[in-house]
Every structure is written in C-alpha cells, then in structure tokens.
Image (cartoon, rainbow, N blue to C red; front, side):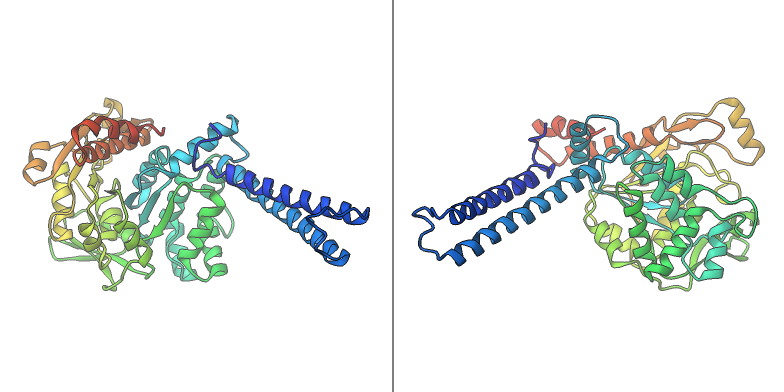
Length: 434
C-alpha cells in the first residue's frame, strides 16, 4: 500500500537516496585526493579543485538528505497524526483518499451546519463551510460589540466539527467560562478574537485556526463586513438583531441585512465556482441559512455553478421562526428570498421522533417538519426522503445519516452524467472512502 500514488512518501525517500548518492560521491573523491590516487575521471582537476568539489558534494548531499527527511517526517506527521493507533500506512491511505474526495460547499450556520460537516469529513477533506456572521447574541455578540470583530461563534462550531481530532481541542474550543469577567465566553471565541487582532484580518485568523485544529476542510465567513440581520413581519413591524427575531412570535415576511451591499470574499466565490456539490442547510431558516444568501452576489454565484444544489431541510420547526412550517414552506421562503429557483434537490426527514421527545418539543412550541413531498415536486425540485434524525435528549440531524444521504444523492446525480455502464462504478467510488 506504500506504493499507492499520491501519498507523497516515495518522493521524499527518493530525495534522501539522491542526497546519499551525492554524499557518497563526494566522500570517494575526498578519499582519493587525500591518498593521492585520483582515478582517471578526476585527474583533470587540481588538488584544490578536487577538494572543493568533494566538500561541496558532501555538503550538498547532507543538505539534500536533511530536506528529504524533513519532508518525509512532515508528511507522516500531518497525514498520520500522532494520536491515530492504526497502522501508519492505513492512515496515510485514508488521508490520500479523503484528499481526492468531492469538493462540497456547505452554506449555513448554527448547530445544523456543524452537524453536517461532522459527517461529511469522513467522505472528503475538500469541504468548504460558508458561515453566516450576523450573530449578535451571547459570547459572539459581546465580542463583536466590545472588540469590533466579526461574531466568531458559528465559525468556531464549524472549525471544531471539521477537526481531525475533536476530543481535546474540540473540548477546549467549546469550553465556556462560568464565572468571573469571562463568564459566558467560550475559549474558542476568545481565541478567534485574539487571533484576529494578531493576524489583523478575520479571514486569515480563521485560516490559521484551521491549521491549528488540523481541519479536514476550510471555513470561510460569508462576508467580512459587520452586518445586522433584520426581520420585517407581516404586520409591518421590524426587529433588528438575529437574537431578537424569534421573540416577536409573528409570521416573518422577509429578512434583510443592514447595511446592504455587503459582498462575500473572493475566495468564497471561487470555492462555489469549483464545487462538485452545494448544500444549503440544515440550520435555522431565517437566521442561519438565509443570511448567507442575502450577501450580494452569493445567489448569483450559486446559480452559475453547474454542481447539484441540495437543500437539507430542518427536522423540527423553530418557535418564533418557522411555526407550523412544512418542508415545502421552508423551500417557498428560501426561493422567495433567492428570487427564483435555487436548488435541484430537497433532502427531507421522513422519520418521527419518539413520543416522549415529541411531547417535550410540543410543549416548547416545536413540531416535526411535515414532509410534503408532492408539493416540493410541483415546485420543480426533486424531493429525497430518508430517516435523518438522531434521538438523544434532542431531536436533530444524525451526522452520519445526513452525510451518507448527501453522498448517495451526489453519486446518483453524477451517475446520470456518465455512460450507463459506468454509473454503478461512479456510485461505488464516491461511497468508498468511509
């Protein structure tokens, strides 16, 4: 398995071998010069020239060997990691396969997006999370107001979800202080705020944090402009601030950003253009998914892409946002804010939570999202129904089930674009990584 192309191990071993040859040639020349028995090959050189050439060859050989060993050790450390107990060749092969995985751009925010990424990272490391940065509540809102940084909360969640090892660093980044001047702040939010001041740029701070966490993918803010999410309700009233929107408890007519005209980073547009698939959601419809699409140029970038576009619908309604919403209602709002057809597929949960959990959510004003598949089909969107929920003390998307459903959907979509004889091969290839 060590001979599999692309693992980047053989190239560095070859560099070491070339360095050894160079060092050996210099050593032989030096010995011949010292003992006065230069072979016919070297007699065209004076003793000084021969000595200089010998030392240069030996020095160059040592330097080449060191570079080869450095490159080899970096590959082993970066791809294998010191915490994985499997055989190193197996780890390297898995990383190699992940690096060849689909480029999936996931657009959203909140716990829904991080749950999706946590599942997808087992199929590809070419993941890009485009995250809303309009959160004004809790630790994120306080840091944004006090330090002028973009709200880091959703970005932090996605970084942790994509981390190669979530156990220690994930727990550290999610650690929330419970007393003192830092009460309510999470370490990860403080870290991103500090990194922004050090790097001088929020986008660069996120990239550096990705390197520290060894994430399987990239996290990008939807915009680098500080914005406020506003909601206008059917009664004509307006509420400013993402955290305040659910408390009005009135049907929402539309949401918008203030100030208007904010644009996405160039890197976001480039990643969308190169995507093999684009996933919207899951996450709060009005406060996690739509804010990304309100950034100027984002909808056009998604529409220009030839990649399949998938909307992952929430499994439960959200009080104050999507009361009594079906899956079709979610899509209707999404398309209305986008200004037209935006997605090709809608991934909808068909399973019902256990009665005790359903009763618990009912008491809080939330219900399972109705899977009105016929209505979705009439909207020109192909509905895909599946059991997507995970039940603990909360009803939410199961990361593995959701990721598997998306990979299966992408495989099926791509199989339509290849000759019939290769359709099954394409399907198996995309699912073979995990």
